[in-house]
Length: 397
Image 1: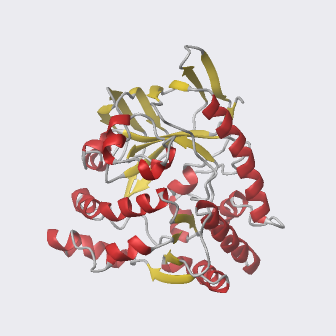
Image 2 (image 1 turned 90 degrees about the vertical axis):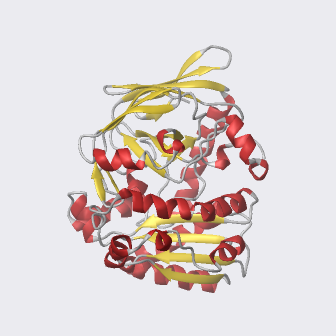
């Protein structure tokens, strides 16, 4: 990326953070985490945050060699270790920006997934802290991806083509990318209001390889356009995890924990995945979905409209793949944890008991599985009426 595009990217990221945390104020603390290959963008983000009078904490992420060595040679006590002061740090943190720029996607492919889940479980309480603070309006976050040779290779694209997908998806060549994003989010806001006005009971998703029923549940709302992800075109909710039934199929492949997984087929009954199949990476998929009880249930249902997303290639990066536009848009589910901000009430008052009673899923993982097939999505309303809400890659509002 040239200097202007990087400056634009940094502006969009900071706008995303401020959109996610509308009460962010001068001298609040903002954590910037960055992979080594994304340092060019990280430095610009750091400078701009300092110029805007935020207190910035900058952390480089572990290299692939360091991460592999940790999982290869650590014992259980080390994997459960959380640095002294980390709890207090996250309890006072106001913002978080992550720049994903991986040097490797496969360095953990031979590592026992159990070791990775042990770390996820041990650090789950930190995510709960930030979720609680976000619900209270004192914390926000955003993230992005910076192009690397590894990402391009795994996506089977040239580096230039991969970089151009990011540039066009994030509007980095626009005269004012922030203005463009604001316009997109206004359009998304209209669709959210329409969906939330329908009073949906159940959602039915059908395609060549799918026939899935998702129950929305009580006190739910659709979210999107929050600034959390750059790019972000999806409109999503966290359904009642107790009643999912039918077949879900992820035709886009995915990388997770160093593993490549494709053609994921899940059969749900009474909310839980009772059959788990993958064309490749099935062993890793099964082990991950056995992390805890919630890992076999869904925490998110999402749709992306082709009128917003310019992404039309597999990117080997869930951030971009979950916002895939292409010809038919995409839907995705996430196995694992729910999002508290989809609660149609005061999120800060969403206690553990209320979450459980309303069917919000709880898990140490959250993994998006994407389908880009031509599909029809219908909704049964609480009054019994059946309406089509999504067809030919577009919302029918």
